[in-house]
Image 1 (cartoon, one colour):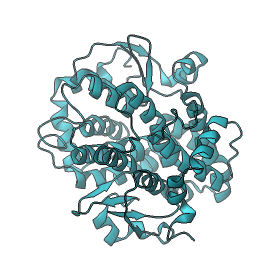
Image 2 (image 1 turned 135 degrees about the vertical axis):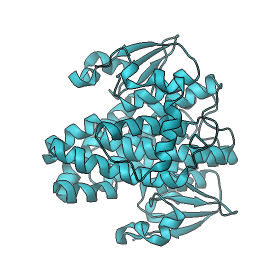
Image 3 (image 1 turned 120 degrees about the horizontal axis):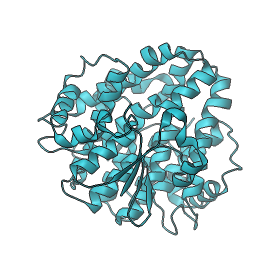
Image 4 (image 1 turned 180 degrees about the horizontal axis):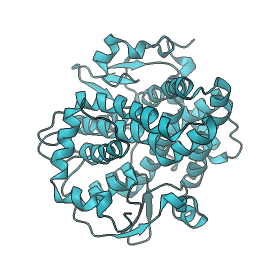
Length: 210
Length: 210
């Protein structure tokens, strides 16, 4: 398999964690977002949405959207299982994952920051100190009430919720957003950081880290 | 079952479609977003994220986040199946659903519009004619390449992709975003609008429509 990825891309980071947890080998194809490589014609042919990541399977099939990719990996390579089979447990894990994947991260990604700057004159400072913290606080405040670390978000096994929380904590730290109000989120992050798969998948461990 | 819903809420609309397709009866509890009812203390006790919808099961269990709720319904009431069982087909359907659910709708919802106005002075006009169309265009341009209506997004059966596309087309029309560039998206919407479940779930058919 081949992962079109960028070290800092939060959605790529999620898929890297899932691949590492399942012990699946893959080749990294770096798509440096900082020089807009994801908007190039060549990458558009790989991923019509021009976003990261894309997972290319050995037969050339390409999958996009990190949560859809992880659901595929979880069905095709069920060990260890990241999304519970029980419908209610599954819904709880998916709800937390969607809070990160729909209501925090898409508002704070690089593309949105660019549009906010060009369309509304949002300054870097306002983005870093007002906009970004606002959505992280709203989302983490809800997640804080939905998880009960033991030590992972939903018990002793790692789930998709942990896979989503950790890259979002990384982003929050990158923008220096205080997280003291969210001890459960921080506990999940600390437990995950001690796990080798999360270390392997971390931004700074990637071949394109800079 | 009880659905905390608002007629215009796009995420509520998705869950209403799924409930109607599966023929599941439910009681609607209206949470009028226009007077900020979803931010009240009483609703916070129902849904810690203070967003719509919430599905309350007969035993009192509450589920949040529309896509997580629909996955639950699809597992608990598999007829008709909205999310394919085959991992690759599933990933394709989920990818389109996530483009709507992560990369279009969360950027254009009422809460975000409010923050854009207060934080960056975004005018109603700029939100309606620049910001909203921008994200709809980006997302629909990708979806246009990922679906092949026959007549639904992934063939003759309705999937989660259709359930997500239709409320997003409704939103696009509400903000008068031209959709001529997206004939496939429009074809899916037209096919779905002819189906009784989509009619039952439509905003204007809700008890709290105004």
